[in-house]
Image (cartoon, rainbow, N blue to C red; front, side):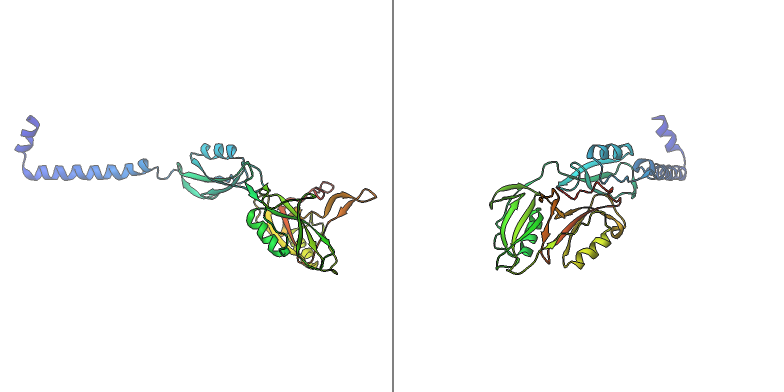
Length: 274
């Protein structure tokens, strides 16, 4: 009460000036503390965790003061299970500490799909159909038949597979195809160890088509990356009378998928025979 009485005894203009001063001080204090409240100025570069195991990626991200959320999982059969496929924000972006990094990882278990009935389809249609289902085209074996480039049989390994059979995504499907009665098979070229540019030239020169190109690592210069695996493989698992692997064949217009890396495969350890 005494404090209030003292205020009432002071001239009005003094109280007004005191009030304005107090408001100004509060505003100044608010703006100076705003940076501390919002963490302004505390930024960090987002690490590159693409290709890392999800546990290692989470540890790396959290050590830099970020939160991490597993946003999605998809399946890529050629990459490591539980590996990080995508991240948001992307690597090397400068963001505030405490920001959430969203990860998409590779599933551990391949999803199951129903094998379609591709008998009677053209080879091109069958290849497109398999790609949509997440299946891969393997060896294309020609047999004498008047229906050129038409699927006569569909196989996993050397066994025919019935339509509707449950198989894992990424499974390689081999085809028996008609040669039109006169067509001659083309040997599948051995592209392992070539650069992508050299492989592209070889494929085109044989009248074949470049299919999917999958990177096993982050690659900036794709043209000069090296082929480390291909589908179909150049050699069969079957051996001839001399104990040598039999060369796989395909037909003109057949496609070849490549897996590439920025490091060339070691000579003598090429994965040509599966």
